[in-house]
Image (cartoon, rainbow, N blue to C red; front, side):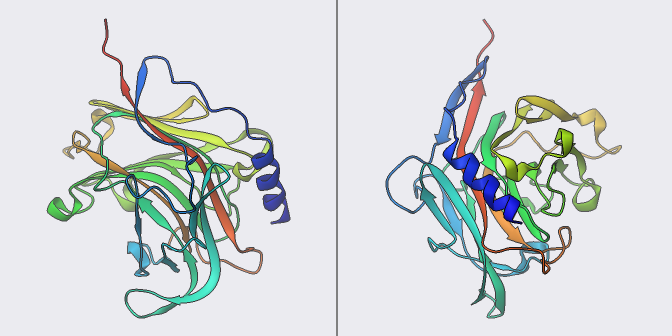
Length: 272
């Protein structure tokens, strides 16, 4: 785990200039996390709180404390800590962390959604950058649709996953694919850009500009609907434990930090 900490330090001090606007797109929303103050911009993000397992048997309580979420040195920092705090159900949990969403502030139908991030590593650590349909209370999950732009299981330091969830293709049946860094590299070693291009008939996943996964309506299980034609909002979170990553063990160091350099949303330029 000391390798993870050294990588975080090296990447922060060596951070370069922000990427240019991709050809064929125009920027419609962004948070560069460069503003003053230690809290995320409340006009762009809602910080969710509580500790109810979040449908995945997760072990953390999410808080809005600056211990767990803050803007610092040009980055959003989401920090998971080993500390006991009661959740909204009254149950004390051994870990704290944070989860943010743009619901109520911004949502989009189609576009390019990307974030430049440095991921934590360690058994039981589960950072995610993802989207949900803006009507989950009305239609339920997974009919609202879910686009997992990036999920990372800390015990697999060089692997991330991009996955689509909808009615008839959700949870373990989600349509996903991993991306593995070459030459044994780890996502904790530096910053990477994770993105999706979302059109009416196709969603493509990218790491550092390279496409590695694509889903179209034709790829869905027979008779299952394409529900990705309605607004979605963005979420960022750092979970601890859960059905997929498992629980932290003696090798897992705390605190763990997910660093986000920016989140940007683009609309496609009209064809001339």
